[in-house]
Amino acid sequence: MKKYLLLPLLAASILLVGCGQKTESAAVVASAPTGASFELTANDSMKFNLTRLEVTAGQDVTVSLTNMGNMPKVAMGHNWVLLKKGTDVKAFTDAAIMAAATDYVPTALAGQVIAHTKLLGPKQSEEVKFKAPTEPGEYVYLCTFPAHYLSGMKGVLVVK
Image (tube, rainbow, N blue to C red; front, side, top):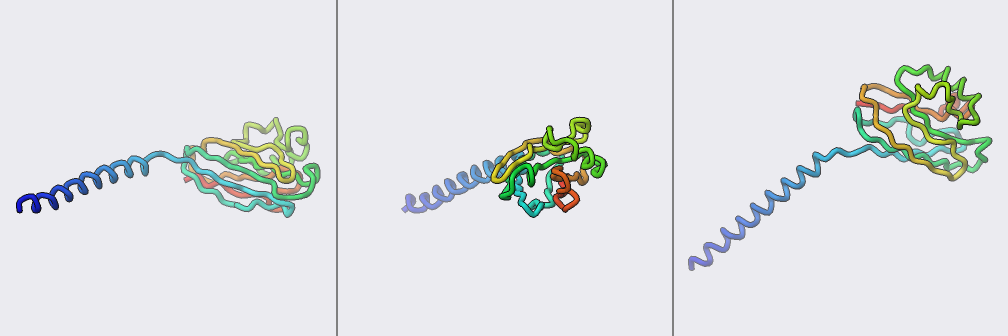
C-alpha cells in the first residue's frame, strides 16, 4: 500500500524538476540578443515596400534589397542608402546625380552614409549588415538613383 502512495509523489517531483529546468533554459534563450532583419523590395514604380523600420540602438541590422522591376538598370536601377542623422538629404541627392560611377553614392559625401547596397538591376538582390546607430532618432534611407528620392523612394529607420 505504501508503494502506491509514493509513486504519485515521485511523479510530481520529477515533473516539478523537469519544469524548473525548462523554464530556466527558456529564460536564457529569451534573454539572448537578437538582430533585426528586413526584406525590402523596390519596383518600377519607384517605391520601397517598407517605409519605416524600427530597431534598438546598437542592434545588429540586416537589410536585404531586391529589385522586383523589369526595366534595365541604366533606366531604373535601385539602391538602399542609409544616411546619418542630420544629413542634408537634398544636398546628398543633388551630389548623387553626378555619381553614376559609384552607384549614385557620392564618394565626397561617404562620411554621411551609415550603410548602403550597390545599384541593382531587375531581379537582383543584395544584403547589407551594419550596427544601428547608438543615438535614438530617425535616420533617412533612400534610393539615390536620379529622381527616385523626389518620386517618393524613401523611408526612415527609427532607432529606439
